[in-house]
Length: 143
Image (cartoon, rainbow, N blue to C red):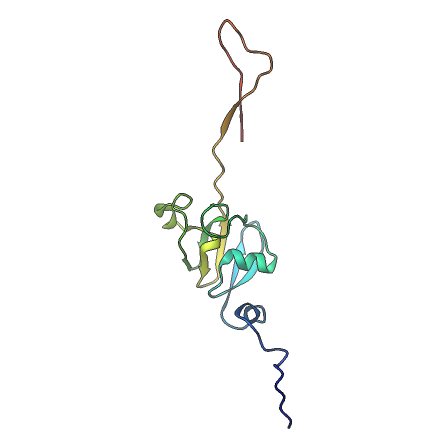
């Protein structure tokens, strides 16, 4: 039998390739209102979601600072990297809230998007209805 120095076509060349080919531990992640996808044991949930084309979680900075990918883990176990306390305070972390870009599953997960809506802002609307005698101004609240 002749040996060649060429790599086997099915041999993974990176950890990402290994995950794509099914090597190593993988966990099923279900995003309520989104989709299901597989996430590698040490892979960040948001990166796996993007890699597989699944949806359901908003994507922002991917570094734990913006809070756009905020989720609540309803079932399963996970580890987290450092994330903004402004977007996920300690008391909410105990309730399962986290940023998807910082979550690494250690089991299958069921998660729900939990993005906080920005605060309501009031803006002045001038429709020619301002009374000069009473100083009344109509205000319209928008989200």
